[in-house]
Image 1: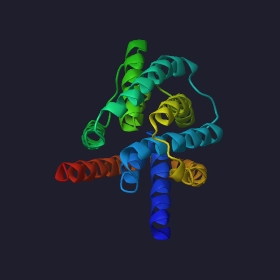
Image 2: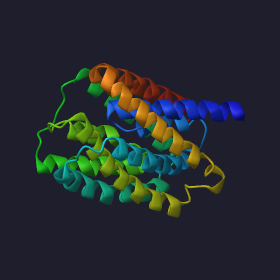
Image 3: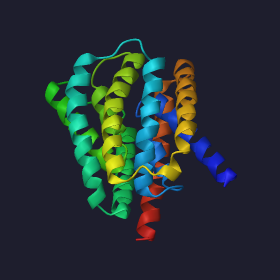
Image 4: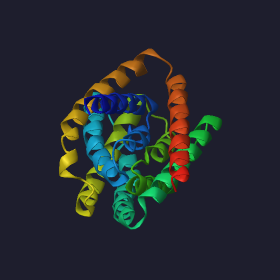
Length: 244
Protein backbone atom coordinates (compact mmCIF):
# COMPACT_ATOMS: atom_id res chain seq x y z
CA UNK A 1 0.00 0.00 0.00
CA UNK A 2 2.82 2.42 0.96
CA UNK A 3 4.81 1.48 -2.17
CA UNK A 4 1.75 2.12 -4.32
CA UNK A 5 1.13 5.50 -2.68
CA UNK A 6 4.78 6.48 -3.16
CA UNK A 7 4.60 5.54 -6.85
CA UNK A 8 1.39 7.58 -7.18
CA UNK A 9 3.06 10.63 -5.60
CA UNK A 10 6.15 10.35 -7.82
CA UNK A 11 4.07 10.03 -10.99
CA UNK A 12 1.85 12.95 -9.91
CA UNK A 13 4.99 15.06 -9.37
CA UNK A 14 6.29 14.12 -12.83
CA UNK A 15 2.91 15.07 -14.34
CA UNK A 16 2.98 18.44 -12.57
CA UNK A 17 6.54 19.22 -13.69
CA UNK A 18 5.87 18.25 -17.29
CA UNK A 19 2.53 20.03 -17.27
CA UNK A 20 4.14 23.25 -16.06
CA UNK A 21 6.95 23.21 -18.62
CA UNK A 22 4.78 21.97 -21.48
CA UNK A 23 2.16 24.63 -20.77
CA UNK A 24 -0.73 22.14 -20.94
CA UNK A 25 -1.30 21.63 -17.22
CA UNK A 26 -0.74 18.42 -15.28
CA UNK A 27 -4.10 16.77 -16.02
CA UNK A 28 -3.09 15.51 -19.48
CA UNK A 29 -0.64 13.11 -17.84
CA UNK A 30 -2.20 12.89 -14.39
CA UNK A 31 -5.65 11.67 -15.49
CA UNK A 32 -4.45 8.49 -17.28
CA UNK A 33 -1.79 7.90 -14.60
CA UNK A 34 -4.32 8.18 -11.76
CA UNK A 35 -6.57 5.79 -13.70
CA UNK A 36 -4.22 2.96 -12.73
CA UNK A 37 -4.87 3.64 -9.04
CA UNK A 38 -8.49 4.89 -8.91
CA UNK A 39 -11.74 4.39 -10.79
CA UNK A 40 -12.41 6.94 -13.54
CA UNK A 41 -15.03 9.00 -11.69
CA UNK A 42 -12.76 9.22 -8.63
CA UNK A 43 -9.96 10.35 -10.96
CA UNK A 44 -12.15 13.18 -12.27
CA UNK A 45 -12.93 14.36 -8.74
CA UNK A 46 -9.35 14.16 -7.44
CA UNK A 47 -7.95 15.76 -10.62
CA UNK A 48 -10.23 18.78 -10.25
CA UNK A 49 -9.10 19.31 -6.64
CA UNK A 50 -5.44 18.72 -7.57
CA UNK A 51 -5.70 21.22 -10.38
CA UNK A 52 -7.13 23.91 -8.10
CA UNK A 53 -3.96 23.71 -6.00
CA UNK A 54 -1.79 23.41 -9.11
CA UNK A 55 -3.22 26.53 -10.71
CA UNK A 56 -2.98 28.55 -7.50
CA UNK A 57 0.72 27.57 -7.39
CA UNK A 58 1.23 28.69 -11.00
CA UNK A 59 -0.55 31.99 -10.40
CA UNK A 60 1.68 32.63 -7.38
CA UNK A 61 4.96 31.65 -9.10
CA UNK A 62 4.21 33.13 -12.57
CA UNK A 63 2.53 36.35 -11.47
CA UNK A 64 4.23 38.76 -13.90
CA UNK A 65 0.99 39.72 -15.59
CA UNK A 66 -1.81 38.00 -17.49
CA UNK A 67 -4.01 38.67 -20.52
CA UNK A 68 -7.40 39.94 -19.29
CA UNK A 69 -8.95 39.82 -22.77
CA UNK A 70 -8.15 36.12 -23.24
CA UNK A 71 -9.41 35.31 -19.77
CA UNK A 72 -12.74 36.81 -20.88
CA UNK A 73 -12.91 35.24 -24.36
CA UNK A 74 -11.67 31.78 -23.39
CA UNK A 75 -12.52 31.58 -19.70
CA UNK A 76 -16.25 32.36 -19.73
CA UNK A 77 -17.28 29.84 -22.44
CA UNK A 78 -14.88 27.29 -20.91
CA UNK A 79 -16.60 27.55 -17.51
CA UNK A 80 -20.07 27.23 -19.04
CA UNK A 81 -19.14 24.15 -21.06
CA UNK A 82 -17.07 22.45 -18.38
CA UNK A 83 -20.20 22.46 -16.22
CA UNK A 84 -22.11 20.87 -19.11
CA UNK A 85 -19.38 18.29 -19.73
CA UNK A 86 -19.08 17.43 -16.03
CA UNK A 87 -22.85 16.93 -15.84
CA UNK A 88 -22.95 14.74 -18.96
CA UNK A 89 -20.09 12.55 -17.67
CA UNK A 90 -22.49 10.79 -15.28
CA UNK A 91 -24.53 9.43 -18.19
CA UNK A 92 -21.65 7.92 -20.17
CA UNK A 93 -19.95 4.60 -19.36
CA UNK A 94 -16.58 5.17 -17.67
CA UNK A 95 -14.97 2.64 -20.00
CA UNK A 96 -16.20 4.60 -23.01
CA UNK A 97 -14.83 7.77 -21.42
CA UNK A 98 -11.41 6.15 -20.92
CA UNK A 99 -11.37 4.93 -24.53
CA UNK A 100 -12.25 8.45 -25.67
CA UNK A 101 -9.54 9.84 -23.39
CA UNK A 102 -6.92 7.47 -24.86
CA UNK A 103 -7.90 8.38 -28.43
CA UNK A 104 -7.96 12.09 -27.54
CA UNK A 105 -4.44 11.97 -26.09
CA UNK A 106 -3.11 10.09 -29.12
CA UNK A 107 -4.63 12.58 -31.57
CA UNK A 108 -3.46 15.64 -29.62
CA UNK A 109 0.03 14.17 -29.14
CA UNK A 110 0.43 13.31 -32.83
CA UNK A 111 -0.97 16.60 -34.09
CA UNK A 112 1.24 18.72 -31.85
CA UNK A 113 4.35 16.60 -32.55
CA UNK A 114 3.90 16.62 -36.33
CA UNK A 115 2.57 20.15 -36.73
CA UNK A 116 5.11 21.85 -34.46
CA UNK A 117 4.14 25.31 -35.65
CA UNK A 118 0.40 24.69 -35.45
CA UNK A 119 -1.39 27.90 -34.62
CA UNK A 120 -4.87 29.21 -35.11
CA UNK A 121 -5.71 32.78 -36.05
CA UNK A 122 -5.75 34.99 -32.92
CA UNK A 123 -9.36 36.13 -33.25
CA UNK A 124 -12.10 36.48 -30.61
CA UNK A 125 -14.21 33.86 -32.44
CA UNK A 126 -11.46 31.26 -32.39
CA UNK A 127 -10.75 32.04 -28.74
CA UNK A 128 -14.40 31.47 -27.81
CA UNK A 129 -14.49 28.20 -29.79
CA UNK A 130 -11.27 27.08 -28.09
CA UNK A 131 -12.79 27.91 -24.70
CA UNK A 132 -15.92 25.90 -25.51
CA UNK A 133 -13.95 22.84 -26.67
CA UNK A 134 -11.41 22.91 -23.82
CA UNK A 135 -14.17 23.29 -21.24
CA UNK A 136 -16.36 20.52 -22.65
CA UNK A 137 -13.44 18.08 -22.96
CA UNK A 138 -12.19 18.96 -19.45
CA UNK A 139 -15.64 18.29 -18.00
CA UNK A 140 -16.06 14.95 -19.78
CA UNK A 141 -12.52 13.58 -19.69
CA UNK A 142 -10.75 15.55 -16.97
CA UNK A 143 -8.22 17.20 -19.30
CA UNK A 144 -8.61 19.97 -21.87
CA UNK A 145 -5.38 21.89 -21.40
CA UNK A 146 -3.89 20.91 -24.77
CA UNK A 147 -6.76 22.55 -26.64
CA UNK A 148 -6.44 25.69 -24.56
CA UNK A 149 -2.65 25.65 -25.07
CA UNK A 150 -3.04 25.59 -28.85
CA UNK A 151 -5.41 28.56 -28.71
CA UNK A 152 -3.19 30.57 -26.37
CA UNK A 153 -0.11 29.86 -28.51
CA UNK A 154 -1.69 31.93 -31.30
CA UNK A 155 -1.02 35.03 -29.22
CA UNK A 156 2.45 36.45 -28.68
CA UNK A 157 3.01 36.31 -24.93
CA UNK A 158 5.93 35.86 -22.59
CA UNK A 159 6.13 32.39 -21.01
CA UNK A 160 5.19 33.79 -17.59
CA UNK A 161 2.14 35.59 -18.99
CA UNK A 162 1.11 32.51 -20.99
CA UNK A 163 1.25 30.22 -17.94
CA UNK A 164 -0.45 32.74 -15.60
CA UNK A 165 -3.27 33.37 -18.11
CA UNK A 166 -3.78 29.65 -18.68
CA UNK A 167 -3.73 28.99 -14.92
CA UNK A 168 -6.37 31.64 -14.16
CA UNK A 169 -8.69 30.21 -16.84
CA UNK A 170 -8.00 26.68 -15.64
CA UNK A 171 -8.68 27.66 -12.02
CA UNK A 172 -12.16 28.88 -12.98
CA UNK A 173 -12.74 25.65 -14.92
CA UNK A 174 -11.59 23.45 -12.02
CA UNK A 175 -13.61 25.27 -9.37
CA UNK A 176 -16.72 24.96 -11.54
CA UNK A 177 -16.33 21.27 -12.34
CA UNK A 178 -15.40 20.46 -8.73
CA UNK A 179 -18.88 21.57 -7.67
CA UNK A 180 -20.54 19.42 -10.35
CA UNK A 181 -18.30 16.41 -9.67
CA UNK A 182 -19.12 16.68 -5.96
CA UNK A 183 -22.84 16.72 -6.73
CA UNK A 184 -22.31 13.72 -9.04
CA UNK A 185 -20.69 11.83 -6.15
CA UNK A 186 -17.21 11.68 -7.74
CA UNK A 187 -15.38 13.14 -4.72
CA UNK A 188 -15.21 10.33 -2.17
CA UNK A 189 -14.34 10.77 1.47
CA UNK A 190 -11.88 7.85 1.41
CA UNK A 191 -9.86 9.62 -1.32
CA UNK A 192 -9.59 12.98 0.46
CA UNK A 193 -6.35 12.00 2.22
CA UNK A 194 -4.71 12.48 -1.19
CA UNK A 195 -5.65 16.18 -1.37
CA UNK A 196 -3.02 17.61 1.06
CA UNK A 197 -0.41 15.34 -0.55
CA UNK A 198 -1.31 16.66 -3.99
CA UNK A 199 -1.25 20.26 -2.74
CA UNK A 200 2.41 19.77 -1.77
CA UNK A 201 3.07 17.97 -5.08
CA UNK A 202 1.54 20.89 -7.02
CA UNK A 203 3.75 23.46 -5.28
CA UNK A 204 6.95 21.44 -5.60
CA UNK A 205 6.22 20.37 -9.19
CA UNK A 206 5.38 23.90 -10.33
CA UNK A 207 8.54 25.26 -8.70
CA UNK A 208 10.74 22.60 -10.36
CA UNK A 209 9.01 23.24 -13.69
CA UNK A 210 9.74 26.95 -13.32
CA UNK A 211 13.43 26.20 -12.74
CA UNK A 212 13.54 23.93 -15.82
CA UNK A 213 11.95 26.61 -17.99
CA UNK A 214 14.86 28.87 -17.08
CA UNK A 215 17.54 26.27 -17.87
CA UNK A 216 16.59 24.41 -21.03
CA UNK A 217 14.84 24.71 -24.36
CA UNK A 218 11.09 24.87 -23.91
CA UNK A 219 10.58 23.19 -27.31
CA UNK A 220 12.76 20.20 -26.42
CA UNK A 221 10.96 19.59 -23.17
CA UNK A 222 7.58 20.17 -24.84
CA UNK A 223 8.44 17.42 -27.34
CA UNK A 224 9.28 15.05 -24.47
CA UNK A 225 5.94 15.84 -22.85
CA UNK A 226 4.08 15.15 -26.09
CA UNK A 227 5.86 11.81 -26.55
CA UNK A 228 4.76 10.84 -23.04
CA UNK A 229 1.22 12.01 -23.82
CA UNK A 230 1.22 9.85 -26.96
CA UNK A 231 2.52 6.78 -25.10
CA UNK A 232 0.10 7.29 -22.21
CA UNK A 233 -2.84 7.63 -24.60
CA UNK A 234 -1.80 4.50 -26.47
CA UNK A 235 -1.50 2.44 -23.28
CA UNK A 236 -4.83 3.77 -21.96
CA UNK A 237 -6.61 2.99 -25.24
CA UNK A 238 -5.16 -0.52 -25.60
CA UNK A 239 -5.86 -1.39 -21.96
CA UNK A 240 -9.52 -0.42 -22.19
CA UNK A 241 -10.15 -1.94 -25.62
CA UNK A 242 -8.57 -5.20 -24.42
CA UNK A 243 -10.88 -5.35 -21.39
CA UNK A 244 -13.94 -4.10 -23.29
